[in-house]
Length: 393
Image 1 (cartoon, one colour):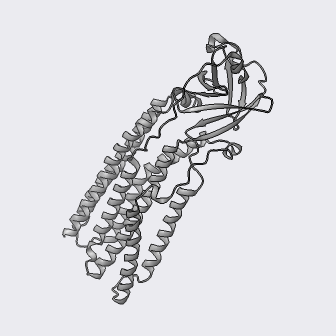
Image 2 (cartoon, one colour):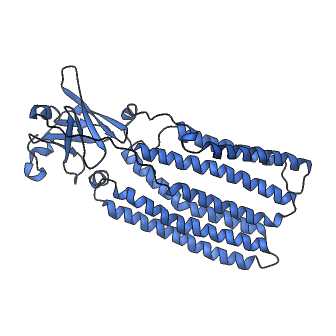
């Protein structure tokens, strides 16, 4: 009977970590990221939406979903406690419910990932721009996880293979034979493919800063490696329990695996990305002639159109096509290079052989967008100084 209570204790820990503690810490980590996103930039991307209200709405919905799942887990825990007192209870029913509940705990995080992907799609550059994006330094597995942990993962695989070969010489009912090696190997091959794709595959979040990208890769790598270790240990424990005729502890082993998987996933997702040192920019003074060279309209593809205007001493940036967008001042650090003071973003104007400005490059967190200068085509939006605070372009 002690194995039953041990299983119920691990399930209670799974509810606490996965649906109460984890979401609370996750929201606490996400809030500073939302608050750090520039309000002006958010208004340009999502007209009519308020940044802070959107962040709080997400926190409320995420918390409500996890609270509902926690309540469902407590009801399931109560039912299992009563059900497992009966002499005719079946382990298969408990296993099925445990798996379904574990998947339910993952659902809010999957929805959050889907919404994040949609947000990144809004920021995604055009195909022509992607060809000119900055190439990050190539990184390897040991940049995100220690060699000792990788050694433990490989050692766990070798030991479970040895255990399966030993059990093959001393089989017991339900041991599975070489099918266990096939299962573990296929799972490891899949996880290795996921890690390789994260390290060397196409960048799935191109507008993000380098710190955010590295943090996302680190979360994937750590989660996958620890999952490999946990899956291998769980398989070894299941086989060992069968070998020792202690199969009644199998449900506890599965509950412990789900609890540890939930704990490791929570720990990986709430770790903050390391901040990267931003380049210090020094404002200089440019003559009006140099500023006027940059005035014009620039097309970066996929409806991303901006206009640069000058009031004689200052350049102003305006995102076109967004009714509530308003001009933002940009500051010179070189004759053709300007920067923002409130966000880590810069713009550099490009010229032809004759010195005429023909395009521009926007840099944000190591990512580049390239645009071409186009004709104004009508009355420029900066022609009303009382509305925008700057003179005619």
